[in-house]
Length: 327
Image (tube, rainbow, N blue to C red; front, side, top):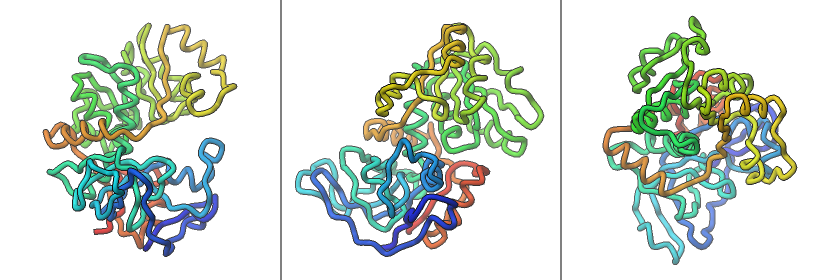
């Protein structure tokens, strides 16, 4: 079967290859999925570039990808929650990484049935961004009437997070470029900040929550935007000490700079290292079927053009998700 594999660390074009590999065998609790679509995520190309070597150890060559939708074609004897022919979607766990492929084996306990009212391509766009946004926003207890800043509203995580925050009844600020202002506003954002002409720090002030999707200085600047006792939730900044311990970084300590910012605002700070979760996927399915969440797709590529898809994604200009379709 065809698979897109990381052969070595380095530039995307030189490090990825479409190879023929063996169809996977099933372990207890596994289902075998005929892949209909897979979606690409920034974590994928960061793995290729070797930027996550210290956190995620890969045994190269390895098939790339975490998001998948498809059809169950085989299952282990102990699997009772899925039947042959079920249409599913999920974010596979790290140990089963490799969804840009024709068939993938997945732990059935991490899988949900695909929303009935969307395509396989749309379903594949949801798991990683949906789980990331939900876990990040719920980690700081988002609630009705919270004033929330979500950075990069036109990106995969940002576009889902805007919709989810509105489901929760929050008042949403977001940042994007001029060309995406109207599009992001249509997702439900209450105040769209065009970062090419406006300074978000002058507009988004005294907030309950900042969702930092960008890292770097944006993580530290988030503390300027929150009120006293506000909350910063990040997927790109330094770990908090609890999350660091969970990630195996036992001697990790927050920087003095970050500690001072937290103390000055009596703030809470949390890094989300997203985990697969079938229960949350089922909630996403309901929100999609109820019309509260819409998958956002930028471009769809074939598996033969999957390397070009990653090169495009790495440019950082995608509006929503980039999908590999095998249908």
